[in-house]
Image (tube, one colour):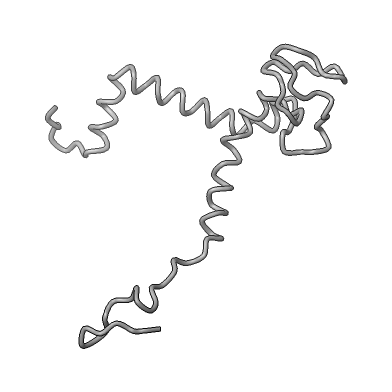
Length: 128
């Protein structure tokens, strides 16, 4: 599709994507997932990362069952008694933090030494 005079690339892309119902639906879905991840601490019944809230007696409950204390687990619980709905909603919020932490703590790549190094001069390789 040809751009109109004076219209930049991002404006043309925005105009085209607003006309595409699949792109609009995808954008709505992404915004909803981000909102759920941000609001998860306030709208979920349990924090799956807080060990004081977990009960091992509520492990492996089927969906729609109640725990010992009377909580309703809509999607059931895992083997440690964590609410699966809460774990799903908390997951996207915690993921970028973990990924960033791993990138910061990664050691630098190993520098080649000895036979692996490229010859510096004269075509000879260091023998160490």
